[in-house]
Length: 159
Image (cartoon, rainbow, N blue to C red; front, side, top):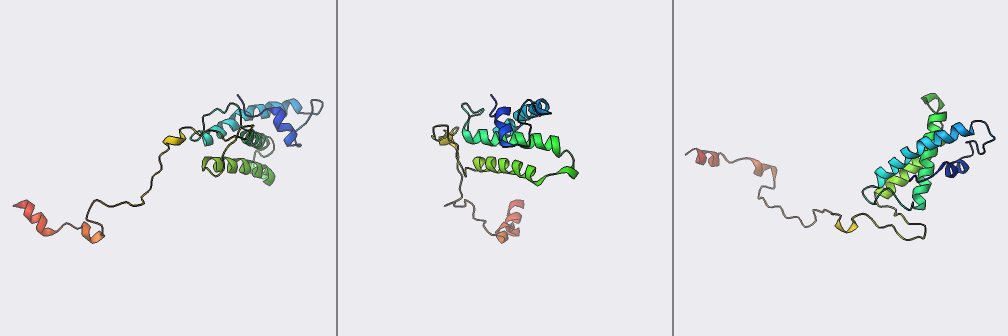
C-alpha cells in the first residue's frame, strides 16, 4: 500500500499540471506514480528499526513525508537532471523530508495515528541501551606503562 497517491502530490506542488486538460498531465502523473514506491522505500528504511512497516493505516506524518519525497524525486528527474538545472527549492523539499525521517529515526519526534495516539514501537521494551556508567575495569593494567611486560617475568618463564 502506497503512503500517498498522485492525487495527494499534485495539489501540494502547483508547478505540476493540475487537471487532465492541461498539457503533460498524464506524463507527470505517470512520473509521480513511478516515484512513489522509491519514496516509500526510503521512508521504510528510516523507520524500520522503530516501527512495523509497511504502515497500515498510514500515519499523517508519513503521508506528508511521502508527498514531499515523491514530489522531490519527480521534480529532480523532470527539471534538474543535470547540475546546470538545479533549483534550490527542489533540493530544499528533499532535505526537509530527509530531515523529518532522521528525526523519527533518532527518536526526536514520534509518530501518531489519525486519532492522535502514539504509534507503538516495534519491540520497544526489548531495546538494549548500553552505558559505561559505573564501569569497573577488571584488569590492573590501566596505564600505558603497565602494558610493558617485566623482563624478570619473561626470564622466569624460560626456567
